[in-house]
Every structure is written in C-alpha cells, then in structure tokens.
Image 1 (cartoon, rainbow, N blue to C red):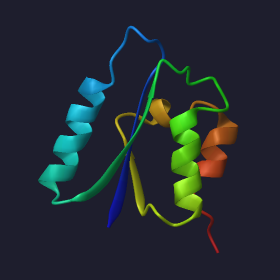
Image 2 (image 1 turned 60 degrees about the horizontal axis):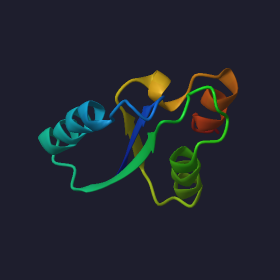
Image 3 (image 1 turned 90 degrees about the vertical axis):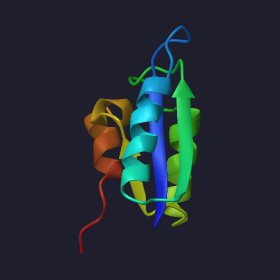
Length: 91
C-alpha cells in the first residue's frame, strides 16, 4: 500500500515536525513502508492552491497513492470545496 503523509503549518515560524513525528509513528506501528511525505510549511489552509497538496492530489489522480494520512483533517482541507474534491467517488 502506498501511503501519502500530508503535513501543513500556516506560518514559516511554525514546524511540521510534531505532525510528521506522529504520522511516521502511526505508519511504522501499522507496518506501512512505502510512505511519501508532502509538506506545506508556511502555507495557509485557506489558500486554494498549495504546492505540496497540489502535487499530492496530482499523484492521487495518477493512482500513485492509495491512502492519504494527515494529522488532523483541517491540515488537509478547510473549505467544503477542497473536502468535496478530495472524497473518493462512489459508483
């Protein structure tokens, strides 16, 4: 299983390390080894375009990622629009 870790902080004086430490431990405890990190440091969650989130979404569309793990959902999406496009399609 290919895992994408997504971490984000809003300002440059904050660090994603606490989020990443917890996310890495979560994956390690479950035996996930194919783990890739996408980190937006100093990028507001209100922004519609975030470089690493955009890359993650592109990788997901290309099926390079099976699961996205984030520390807390608001690190990934705040807006209803972003949440709706990130949810899997149900057939």
